[in-house]
Amino acid sequence: MDQQLTTDIAKLEKLLAGAALPDDLRVKGEEMLARLSRQAQHGNYASDFEQIQHYIDWVTHLPWSVSTQDILDLGHVKQILDSHHFGLEDLKHRFLEYMSVLVLNERQNNVNFHAPVLLLVGLVGTGKTTIAKSISEAMGRKFIRIPFGGMSSALDLRGQSRVQPDAEPGQIIKGLRRAGSKNPVILLDEIDRVADSSRGEIMGVLVELLDPEQNNAFTDHFIDFPFDLSQALFIATANNTTHINTAVMDRLEPILMPSYTDEEKITIGRDYVLPAEIKKAALAPDVVKIEETVWPKIVRPLGFDAGIRTLERTIQGMVRKIAKMIVENKGKEFIITPDNVRDFLPSY
Image 1: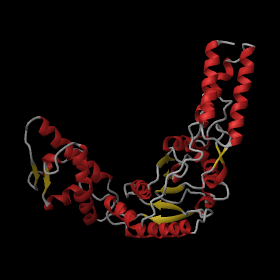
Image 2: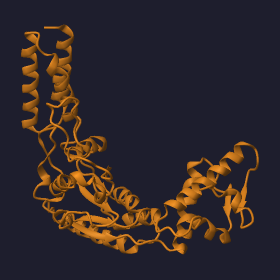
Image 3: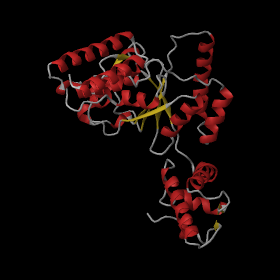
Image 4: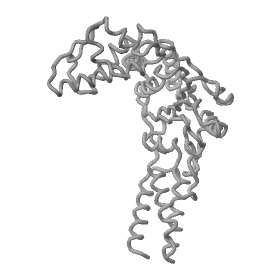
């Protein structure tokens, strides 16, 4: 047998032995390596080695038994949500109610409790994705985002069979590996925007993911072994519910994300977005000052917008212009007034 191959197989055996795997999966991996050793003795292993190596690498790096400890302190959760999001009181109350039920089930050691799956429905820029991130932070859980916009095949979720050339696991398994935890917050982003040609297949996988009777044994085609997703917290988002399958909607709890008024946008821009952008640009907090009378022009540079993405882009552009002027020694502090605001607004 080739000495290099012997060394490589020994490394895979060591990797397999040191990983926390389900017993049946460990046996499956050991049988693969034993078959590879037999093939190598006859000089016929090239076609299988890379495939088995790829498979062993994936299964040994998945969090089969690793989970994070939930932070079930309602005061902490509310503080995190308030620090990242202005308003949205109905959504915050709904989530705190869910957390209260989680606390009570935890106290009674009820392992069969299944969290409702929230569906955040709203226009672009109303904070659907960022609220999901804040929920994961508040609970002390890892965060996975799976974008559905333009998704053209259910294989993107469920992976490809190992017999296919260059086969890979699907987005669910890839996300779990990145997170390193079996109980993350999994954001299913824009589930209403999948490609029409594969909508039925993708919705079928979604039903399996969201159904507590099925998601404790989710099987990716590449891994070909059930993974328990019952401890994960799923949150879905959509711009509207028109294109979401009825069977999927039956498993979701819709929450409407409101559009922001100009007054709310001013508060968000002044108290949340501007300080964050100043920090990103590595500027001192007192370098940029915006007079109150200027904010109406900043929140409506192009007319009405239901969300805050235009507001974020506007403030980002203003801060970048100021950063450039500081680097060019054109000033150290900048006060934006109604008279000079046009000099700082980005061109659209």
